[in-house]
Image (cartoon, rainbow, N blue to C red; front, side, top):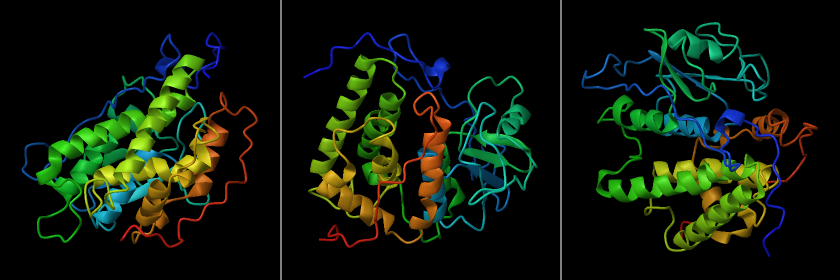
Length: 319
């Protein structure tokens, strides 16, 4: 039965991104320049020219780290991880367990990179950021663009790495990626950052309808588009791996857990066990970020001890 308290609302975590109806409306990425091999832009894919600023807590930034790993770019493009706890000053560069000061520019806060690139920028300072060390500016802050560039522009044709955007299924992949973004990746945020009951219920309903559909899809194939994971799988992974630890409780996406979906859970374990992926997942950063940073949702800033998760157990996805 639907709840009746639809008039109730609360303060938004990001007021500038909350509609009058209490729905979360994510800001658009502002920096969308491209690195190109063909010389059509000022940014060539030169080794050690670019640097990636990320948070291990953020699913959007996490995906760029995964693609960098899969495409063999670890030795060509450096990474700096910010403190997972963010305050009104934004993401900070500090020394800590799994994060560090900025070795490239000496920035204390990520906002300095935005101000150096565009002094008129007035939006939220988000990760990931692809920084050009040569021209000293942000090239791009869209995870979709950065992943595409890592796959298409930074990787040479002779490199033996997985193709994350197979041309033969480009239309199907683009459609599925858009659906997963809207209903799952951003869907958990639309639920968690909703400030009215009706906005929350709409987001959660759409989210679990999508998860139910993906559970059925994955009963028929090992990965979303066949027998090899593509970028769409990794965008889904970044939400699934955080779901039971954070989104189920913190964002009230609690109709079911991922562990309650046999195919989604096995699929999650399958992807987690791909060589090099587990090292990109840091649950300490993930939980500290969400539970400490989102004070409108969790004013006590208490970080839960659970749940106990183990993605290393055997799965039968290969069958």
